[in-house]
Image 1: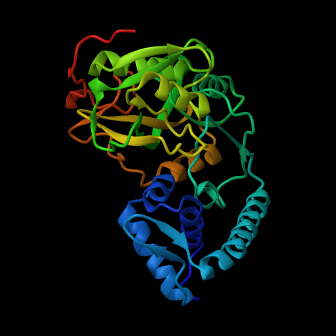
Image 2: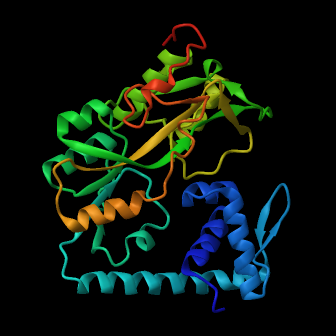
Length: 322
């Protein structure tokens, strides 16, 4: 037990929640093989097997299921200890907002640096960026176009990225070219401003077809209904689905190009407070490029993390039709 680390226990809980090593590694922002190796080390140090694994599924063993609630309780106590220690430093709290995604090990990364207060108001990206600019937040995890950063006096650092896939009816789980996909645009431009802008650039660059909706069906059960109605692969929005994929629909990787969505940690460009800068450094340290600069990766031209000299624009199809 002397070798067991809190980090490994957080990995165990995340895999137990996802029951999929790939999705768990994505949440934790680490490589899949590294996660698998850390779980094996934890199993060795604990002396029990936590998961039964084969090529098709991951399940908790009876020992894993029995230890899971105790592990969660231990991690909660550790997080509480870190929060108490942060309050003892006397530093000013750091206010963090987000859209719908945060690093799974947020508390561990920022422990001892400052008292981190995660804002409970989950709002669209453009709203959270504006709140940082106006001083209502110190940091926000969101998507912000490069032009808005300059206009609002903000700086952005890469903290996460999703490779988007398509959801389609039928049984074919093979690759689908971006030009053969559909991307939804919602008429609610207030709630879906960032997604709509992204979808428009994706369609222009790749030849994907846009379809306009008016029911917020970019995510949730309404999204699945649109997939069935359209009858073609529809690009999935980032981190947007809490409901499981229905059995009549499948996930399909999008290629030519592989399409990515980035998450930025945004702060004011003139920020000088040590606590805010320290939290920013801790959250972005070691993130890497998360595959967004691979040869066939696509990012919209407005993305602040896009390398212009890599020629990310892909002309794979005709002009999109709405």
